[in-house]
Amino acid sequence: MGDEPIVHRMEWQGIALTVTHRKTYPINGFGHIEVQANQRLPMTETGYRSHFISDQELSGFMDAQDYVTQWLEATCKTKEWLAHVQSLRQPSLFDLD
Image 1 (tube, rainbow, N blue to C red):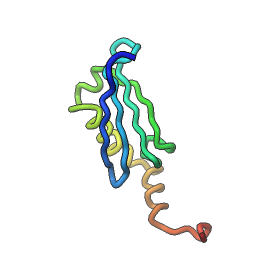
Image 2 (cartoon, rainbow, N blue to C red):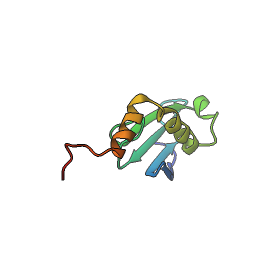
Image 3 (spheres, rainbow, N blue to C red):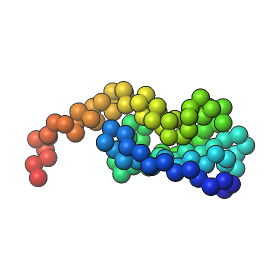
């Protein structure tokens, strides 16, 4: 696939995640970022996201980890994510384990 991936392990709002970045990909001028967590994130309900990114787009960030952090911060303001966070705080009458 080209170069060796750069792996960042990080935590965002108490969620552990891994960001894997390949600077070059078989598509000219693009890199590849994978985001993996064991739970839902603002930009993926499954906890996994694959994202192709141009060198130009990534150049405005320190690294892939910075890019993902800012992506998370931007998407955590959506109505869907805020509703999800609220649902985690409030017990449901249907969750009577």
